[in-house]
Image (cartoon, rainbow over all chains, first blue to last red; front, top):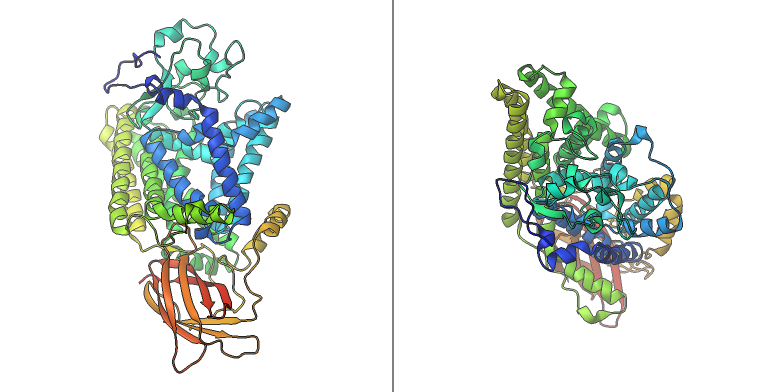
Length: 476
Length: 145
């Protein structure tokens, strides 16, 4: 492997694929996928036949506590590692060996619209059906992902499920904007002389496929739509693909046109995805504190209904549609006058919305980090019990009393993550304001900074509330 | 006071599965066919209540009454409770109950609820002759202080 990329940057750049052993391990995607497939099979098995008590079942514990915590941790310290190791692709790849898909995903559905609906649907189902409390439903959700990936990609070409539908993928694509790693070319000059474009089309001998998400490495800008699968690295005959370090959030600072993605300022769907990602972080945390129950009772009284689905639907619409429209609309209305060319409200929102993503990542990390850190060791006795139930008691008697870090330790970490996220958002929004309003950047920046501080205050308030982990259903 | 349904064995909400039925009927059949059945069938009834009636975060007094199918008190048992939150990843708390000297079959103790929300109790009563009663008892809506 050659040395680090030659692209001039302020920070020293390291290429992890060039690190002995680590690079080879990262390129062994199938190994990671098989490991995750085995883990998934265990979770599904225990979810369906194990004890139907969430804290005693590997499906609920591993998925809703450890997987989510590790997912956001990996995104923050490395990159989209869970897409790299995605087990859903194994049966999908097997199905494609039997039948090649021939259809193209309808043009109307390209972009992130379906993915946004899928992401919101999973979050809605999580609350409505108390997925966190139901091992068998969690197992069905895992099976649903396998089925969805296999069926969609059996019909449609490319990585349609990953790019346009997978809720986990959309979450990872947005959050990985804050990742310190990015797949990119090592030497731009090598790509300039390349005529095969194998990173996109696949190796000439058919041994390695090219990027199924349509990302051409030399023109790639950022982590959006990149699953870190490293198919491009395996296909490149010039060994010119790096997994390089970078400034987290770098891709949000400029408006470069990237292969397969285009310019962010021209992609309203990406802006909506980022907005939903950020406000859903607040909504998901809101679902775990006591004020949500009072609000739900109020909504139910106003609507004159006892339907959980209806009340939850109103809550989701209020938090993911009405609230963002009002807040971002106000910020855009106040800032657009300072922008070059005085764009419309929607265009202003599309340009600035990505600036809220770092705060959204901070809220998700604080929330998921709380569960992960406070429940860190609870996986041990549950695994001991599951293994013993399977007739293999070699792990010893379950130690049910173990937990994790104390709340007094975790809460400062939560607040630190929120503050880091807010600082990141302010930095990105300032960069956008300078780009879009070079003559009056402060005026363009101020409303968005105020919005960021408002959302930060809401997040701090939410996470400072005593938690009441209940279903968000109406009380009988 | 909160009196439990003697047949309560589920840590999920009553009717929760029914809400899935229209969309996932086929898979539901598969899942429920594989799921373990309740642990009732020993002829015993378990009734419990808290003081205060709606438990709050902290130490709450619990009273458990055990009776057999004929309504006679089941005395002389060693009764232990493991309290868990409905949400995975929370550390359980444990309590050993002591039989009331004046009320046979009634066992008293304290449960430490460390967080607001939905809890369930894993109760096990055992006798020297090997008899055993096990129940999973829902405690929804423990209030934050």
